[in-house]
Image (tube, rainbow, N blue to C red):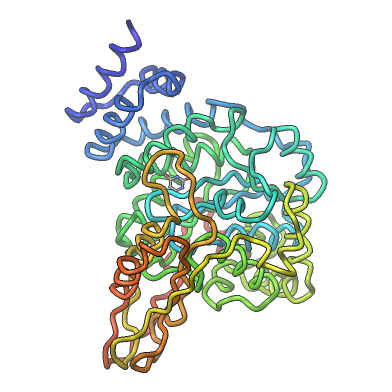
Amino acid sequence: MASDMTILKMIKDKRDGNAHAEDEIRWLVDNVSRVPDYQLSAWLMAVVLRGMTIEETTFLTHAMAHSGQVLDLSDVPGPRADKHSTGGVGDKVTLVLGPLVAAAGVTVAKLSGRGLGHTGGTVDKIEAIPGMTCDLSVERFKQQLRDIGVVVASQTAELAPADAILYALRDVTGTVESIPLIAASVLSKKIAAGADVILLDVKTGAGAFMRDDQSARELATTMMQVGERLGKHVACVVSEMGQPLGTAVGHANEVAEAINTLRGEGPRDLTDLSVALGALILVGGGLAKDREEGEAKLRAVIESGAALTKLAALIEAQGGNPEVIRDPSLMAQPRFRIPVEAPEAGYVQALDALSVGLAGKEIGAGRLVKGAPIDLAVGVMLHKKVGDWVEKGETLAHLLVNDESKIPTASQALLGAYRIGGEPATPSALIKAVYSAERSALK
Ligand code: URA
C-alpha cells in the first residue's frame, strides 16, 4: 500500500538525516490517525535525533494547525490573546493568567495540553475541578469568548487533532525533547485557536525540556521564525525552570495555589511571573503603553477581586463547580501527607525541578502509558525553596500520596531534589529574556 511505503520511506529518510518534502509532511499529518503507533514513534524518534530544517518545521506546524479547523475570531471582541508554556514543573500560570488578563479587558482564547513527560498539563489540572471540562465544541468555544472573554480548551477532533495524537505518543516514547516537535506542537495549537497576540513562555533549566539558556533561545527563535513564515507575530519570554514554580506540584493542589494567587495570596514567583507575562500581553494588545503600566493594571485587578470573579465565571462556563474557589477541599484530596525532613541545617542551594516532577510521576501524577488515568489528588507541596534557611529535621516538603507503597521511593526522590549547604544562595532571575519581532511592542 502506498501509505505504508510513505511512512517507511519517511522513517528511513529521517533516520539518515534527510529533509522531508512538504507533501510528505502533509501526507503524514493527514494520515496520523491511520499510521500505526510503532511507525509514528520510530519517525518521532528519528526527528528527535536528526532534527528538522526551519522549512520542515514550518510545513509540519502548518499541516498540524490545519488538521482541524483554524478559527476565525474576527467576530469576537479583541484584543484576542493566547499564551503557552513549553512545559515546566508547578507551572500553573495559565490558570492565573487567563482570568487575570481577561479581567483586564483581553479576550483569552487558549488551547492547552495534558501532562507531557515529567511536566504537568493545564487540561489535566483543570479536570481536578469537579465537573469542569476542556473538551469544547468550536461553537461553544466561540460563544464562551463572547460571553465571558476567556476559554481554556483542549485539542479536539475539531481543533489541532494531529497534535493530540502526536502529543500523547511523545509523552510515553521519550520523544518530547525536540525543538521542531515542540515548536510545531505549540504553534499549531496557537494558530488553530485564532488569537492575534501570541506569547510563548519558553522554560529553561533542570525542569524544562530545554535544559540550558542556549537551547531555550534556539527554541524561542525557531518559534518566532515559524510564526513569521505563517503570518503570525509571536513574542517569546525565556523564563526560569531550574526549581519548580510556586509551592504546589500536582493537580488539585496546583489549582488551589492558582486560586490563592488570584486572591492576592499566592507565592511571590508565581504572582510575579503571571503579572509580568500578563503585562506583555496587555502591551501587545494595546491595553497598556509599557510593562510597568500593564503590571500596575493587573495588580489592581487582583486586588479588586475582579480576577477571582473571572475565574469563577470560567469554571462555571466549562461545567465546573465554582465553589472550589471558596473551598478547594471539594477537589480530590490525598490519603496521606508525608513530611520530608531536612537531614542537616543550612541554606537550600538547589531544588531540582526535574527530580520533583519525577517524584510526582512516581506517585501517580503523570502517565507512563498512553492515555492512562492520572491521580489528580497527589503531588508535592514545597515549603522550602532556593535561598531559604532550614533547620535540621525541619519539613522541606510534603508528599501528597494515595498509594502507600510508593512512599519510600518517592520520599527519597524528593529529598534528593534538595541540595543544602552552608553558603547562602539566591534564586535565579525569573525572566531571562524577552524576544519579539516587533520589539517596540514588548519592551
Ligand atoms: N507544550 C506543547 O503544547 N507541546 C510541546 O511539545 C511542549 C509543550
